[in-house]
Length: 198
Image 1 (cartoon, rainbow, N blue to C red):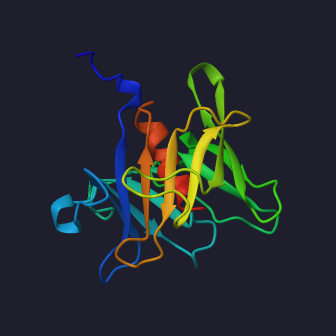
Image 2: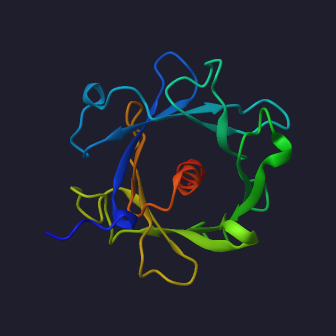
């Protein structure tokens, strides 16, 4: 049997609110049927700040506790303003803000049916990405057309679907994201943080 292409190994994360605390958690799960108890500790945590001036609305941390002494953020995002654009940052906005790489996520469509952003690559290059609403695609194990889903593709080319983000509308289970390709941890960080803005 041929080995699985490491660039196409899928990962599924479940977005949930934190009990008795503000913020969210991304739990790594085997499938959509995995229970919260089976998932164990969150793989990522998100701190929210909606009333702090000049502070990101969402800050992504690796691990279950963003308040741990060794916790450092890996990405952040500001909610969109009146011009339908958001700031997204890759890096440690708390301890090394001067090293954060900033990009813009914006919608050019009526009804905000898509959002464009760029993934920074090596040697100053970028990969232009686009979140698009879709009723034809679904998380593995779910039926297309049910629920509000977004697919992540290259801008101008929908052949390769890098990720699917499906809204759930619940408290304990707000959304599910399936990352279809492995392009390194920073790519995952950008998918997870931009998903918070959909």
